[in-house]
Length: 111
Image: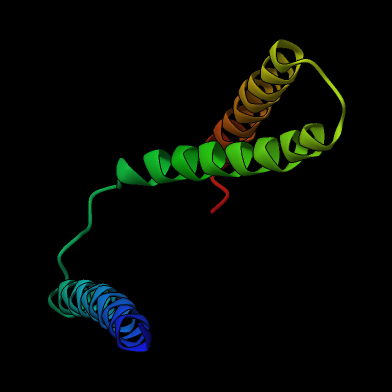
């Protein structure tokens, strides 16, 4: 039984190490490409992905806050329907607020 636990730990370590290595490699090559563009004077067109990333981060931030708030509802003695409504309502409201904030940041040029 202990051998299985060791194998699971080794597999998890190898998996996350591989993911980290891939992320670091991609980031390094993106940096090198940008550096070469600057050296050769190639103008970079404005990125449309920047707004998408800002909106995606706002969405995730809103979901995280919504999950944090809705976790507090699990400790209350509520019926199942009421708990579901409160949880989903909180998630939708917080996600919407996160997207509104992200839209404001994108318009102001923050980030």
